[in-house]
Length: 251
Image 1 (cartoon, rainbow, N blue to C red):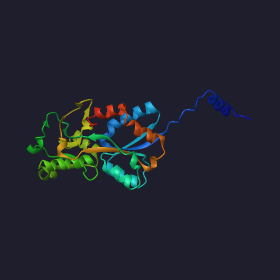
Image 2: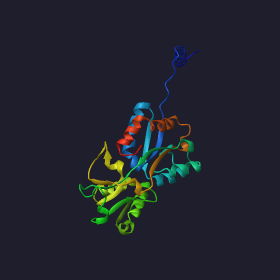
Image 3: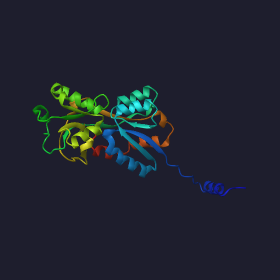
Image 4: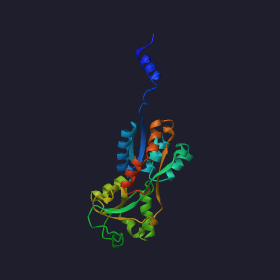
């Protein structure tokens, strides 16, 4: 005896129709600097594909350790290109899936209007007690800040005034709350829609530090998950690119 559901499927088959693909979910580890754009992209991704991206934000260095220790992440959006490559070589990621989704920009920012000039001369003037940076051992933006200060010949004099954040999100918090008069953060944290959201800033010339190439990669736990593959494809779409560039990232 045929059940009601089998009869429905038989009718669908006769009509040439197929059952809808079930939407899935993907666990995504996202570099802290990419928080705001990824939240927007995830909402668009779910609306356009039906798949859901469950987001966790933090430092790339910590994610690396967590992934190696069995964390359930399926996709990594790193703040660098070295970590995804390393995970691929070590068997924790699908190397062939890796691509650069954004090139980040470093900015010296203060929550105070007029405090940071458009050439970064405030660094040489030294009229501040604290400068916030992300941990350079864990956060690529922190490493870029140290490299930039070194090329400017200011690292030795300014390093004693460092206030170090665990990641770029905490670094931004130090500056936004006034615990540090200024700090090196990601341009995406203070820039949206082609304009500075608040305070004053100097966009650090790209020539002062290594390119902040941010790579995405499907992790071993995401292999075979259609939602993971769909997200990687979506990050290359015009819809995602528009969001990414609106936050000041280079294409």
